[in-house]
Length: 317
Image (cartoon, rainbow, N blue to C red; front, side, top):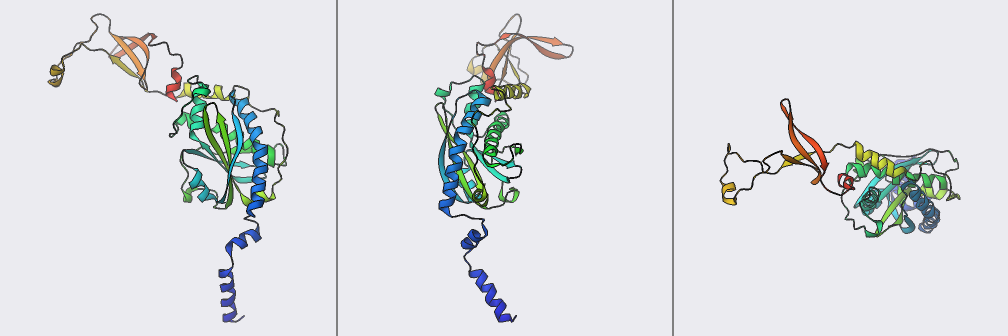
């Protein structure tokens, strides 16, 4: 082959429409075909996920098909990843490139309700980064969505579905294990009491084109019992370490005298007999205690609850 012929071939390849090439190789689908596949999947997934979440949390959650977007995976993540928790998923024999985004306010609201802190109808959640406990508990939502997806797309009813550790921020592109393929982002609108938020599933277009959506029974038996998430959450909160503070009331002083305090000055306790101490954590008073001493260390003895609030665990999530 002459040098001129090789140059012509290279020029032809360079001039070839990459979008057309991706369609010819099956990595990108016709927008209408992809939209049809996405609508079919969302229609089957919504009632299945709604029933699954209610079974594991005991809370009524409405799941409805939402918006669809098509584009490169990283572009879709940047558009949809604000105020969302990121999680990767895999379904054996089907795909290792499942990506899920969950609105952080959904997790905050569900944790509040499961700990007895709020009525779902009165929720007023402001999106914020999740605490470690909330991030850990978000796994339940991701696991349920990935498992519901498995029931609809896998030919093997025993295929293993798994998810990665949730992240409060999107991974940088160089640290992202999934390639930047042509993808479809399918949003599920979530209605939870007064809260409206979303879950988004991002899948490769090539995978959608070759997948067949199967029927799945909503009343299928689940592995989790009806209070599975509440028990898991309570256990996680109980195991978490919380920094305690002990406060002792001091004798009142005039403001002018306080402004003149110097190192070495002494201030008396307010109590003249037994010294009462308030034991607090996260700014919430928990118990009243008596101040004492054991050997060289000062100690406090818990005597009574500091208030009537029985749902104080909510403040430690």
